[in-house]
Length: 216
Image (cartoon, rainbow, N blue to C red; front, side, top):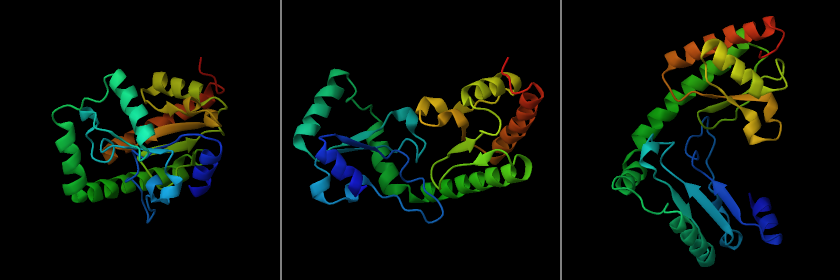
């Protein structure tokens, strides 16, 4: 983080740290916010935080932009007000305060449940779909699955699965890089739903192979 911040300072790049999923870390992994860096490294840094993912209140549109630098904060304030984004609704501010001050028990139980779902996915893939590699690190409820053994176009595969079996998975290409080899699975749901999703995934991958890996 320090190296990135120094490079941003050197080349006059504003560093924006999206930390909306920050509290959803597992197995002893520690969430380290960008503002843990020394003051000398955060002058051109902005952090984005929100209780929406961690506390399931996305519907309230409660998010915060934190900018230590006065000039940067003024530019952000002008921008979001031009687009009328700086008008939180009646519930968003008290809900944010309640989430961060009084909801430790909720977060602990949520992380425990999500950890169980993640572990189930890893076990299932190893036992039933060994060619699909579990590629996620120890954070968030959005799991990356390496499907390069099946295709070089995750977009086509995800579209095929959706039509074939009604399972909605995100293709990785929208995130660029090597995303063409990955699909994303959301496990923020009951374990029974995860089980059903994996059953459908197995069935549809079998159909994909029977059709020679074609989405048509």
